[in-house]
Image (cartoon, rainbow, N blue to C red; front, side, top):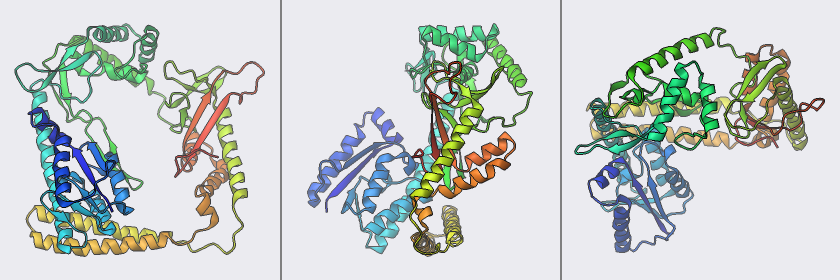
Length: 512
């Protein structure tokens, strides 16, 4: 079988290139090409995977995901890389995914310093230990970079990844770091927005004015009310720079790692080296007015009044649809400036969604084959117990790693403990695969969402409040795309020109 190459450039490589050390991927390709020639390995022209991304998680590396799929399928005899750290610097789970893929497929890892064979027990342990040490090195580099950014911000430099509207990012003359330089046309728009807000205009009205003027954001999109509010509360326009205003927080939701960026009160705010667009007095007045308006807008509370809240998206622009009251009733409408989607009665859209769900359940039930035998045994509880065993063993493995870092365990004790826990995890995962491969009923196999949709429709008559109806829909529906190309005329059926695409859990596909 042929071999492939994996080349990855990280942040450290970008810094090395800035010092004049050459293009990283090209240099690594030359090294691996010479290595393949010396060892007589067959590397097809299309078997070179290039990626420019940090090694934090596999989820953020599409080429690595593709490589792992092909390794599991046994397409490659081996993978060439300059060092093991290029494959994975992620957490324990990512390290386990990489090690497991190469181990079970029998794929070798070939580096200029060493060839790792999955059939060799010592190579396997050395690979796992190398991945663990790579993670420690990655964390140390990340800490140093964060400390460097914080120091740079305190000196007044701009370290953001994107330029704020009204400025361009430029290198500081005669010193390290970057600062901001005004773009005159955009700076005038920013000053006008602050003046409009101080004169009494709201964010939505300002967004409409900018749309009429033909002004767009940095990425060429139309201004929205949220974008205007975000602009007005950015201290960069008053001459400040900030860092860690939205600190990254990771949590587990539904078995997956979710990354959120909530507002933090431990951020760094310092005077910047750039020229401000508005005065500090203007910025403070705008901030005070925003607090007063926000307080007035929330007097009526935060109870859910829309059964489709969080589910209904505009089919034309992709933004969320909003509930609006007017003398003719309750409507749902797209508030994105410039969107041509027409509004419709909330009750009409809700009834159409429920009718579509009922019609789908009938069609799906008719399409099911007749059961040839009684329903099979439910293995849900057994699978849950095995998954809990895997989770407990992985926690013990994390504790063992912590003991190694604190030098309570020696390297030999850690490897011995890791071997025991890995065997326990593999046994539990094997049991999960066996249980999941057991035969299921035709309904579970062909239409997994069908029982859940039926339960929602059966419980719907008993849901009284909008919050209860919203919770029911969220149990079966991931999102609903709404589109209406033209408003209704007098005497016309209110359902005309409305198109709904309903996406069910756990799938991303629409109803058929």
